[in-house]
Image (cartoon, rainbow, N blue to C red; front, top):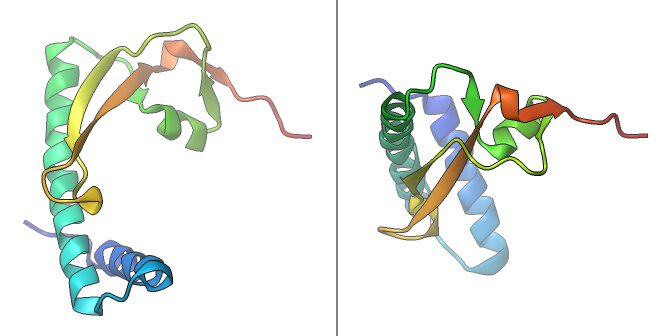
Length: 114
């Protein structure tokens, strides 16, 4: 399996700089943490695709933050189309959280900031 090494190194530097403000960790520890993160991303993406297929989702879907990055917002009263428990190794070994996904039809263009 090929990994995006640029993304890996950026994540490692992010962890290293973030930890420097709080605790002293070596770059080696930050790199190990980045490897756990990038490997978890592959597993998480597989879980998300499987959950979407099981739910019969054929429409474009993203998380709340994903839609925000695309310039759309989730309509206030909408409930998630499906949820997936994903791994978050950056929070610690074995840590997970439930991630919600919304369909394109559940979003609207985000208002322009003035």
